[in-house]
Length: 443
Image (cartoon, rainbow, N blue to C red; front, side, top):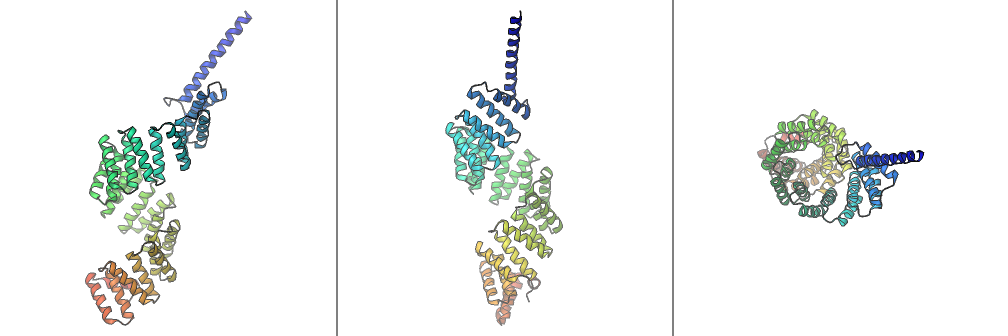
């Protein structure tokens, strides 16, 4: 009887172990997402620790645990487990692909591409790996390779609107608006309610300054998804381009309501406030945008201009300086710092160096030539000032400010007839130009 009891106990233990293993596999596989990440990880860990399965089964357990770690945001552990799955099964294409996704999220784009390469070698028609590799190429600015990968994925799955949207975005990235719009059109034909496709097509039209078509697409995107911050923001760009700043501000504000961390929306709302003459709100919005994105050279430049409007030269110069530090080839920031120093009548040699540097980046920029001329005038370098005013007027013969200022310069050199001719011509172009020149400190 004792022997029979032992056999029954052993059978019960074996049955219990099988049941436990089945529960662990159910949690580890988590096919219907019924379990939390912690429970899925626990199930996979139990299977891995038991170590009873075949290599392929253990590879699957590591792979599933990696997916659970990935879903929980623990990318390092996910990468480690995908690696374990690959070591157990070197042909595990989806493990390579998913590890590529984890590397991509960590910002290690070269390693991501290497893993996508491996996945695609194993499965040449692996559309997910192809499209994900394309996404990384697009992030790196390698638009031709991105387009090639999206095209390969589209050949396998020609009715997937998202692939056409993404390829269109790559075309737009390389400046090929025609092919971009063709892809967006195709995506919309496949899915007429695809809000992101209307948004992307609208941005392509905006690039071409076709504001009517852009507005129509943004309106459609918003009607399909009225809580889409980027569509509201983009429509605000069109309103701003049309100088309808009140509507632009309304759209930027709505975008911020749905996404309070939308730095670009704050920055562009600031520009709209400044254009409307509301400098305090402009500066407040630039403060918000820069708190969210402290490396945005464009918004430092924008805030600098708002400070310059209020004659706060110290803060303006500081912001233009920070913008040029963040982007040394940002010619507008250099030109604006030149302008601020000239208006403040300080550091004029440094101002001259700023204008020279800006013109080395963007030659024949009218505003910078005009500003450098003012600096030369303040430095009593009248001949050089006249040369710059001549250059401005060759580019724009109707620049009244430059023409009147050249008249002031000519008078300094004793050319009374030339001075009178310039002043008369400038006043016929802009009757109040004399007052504007006097505000610059020129007489």
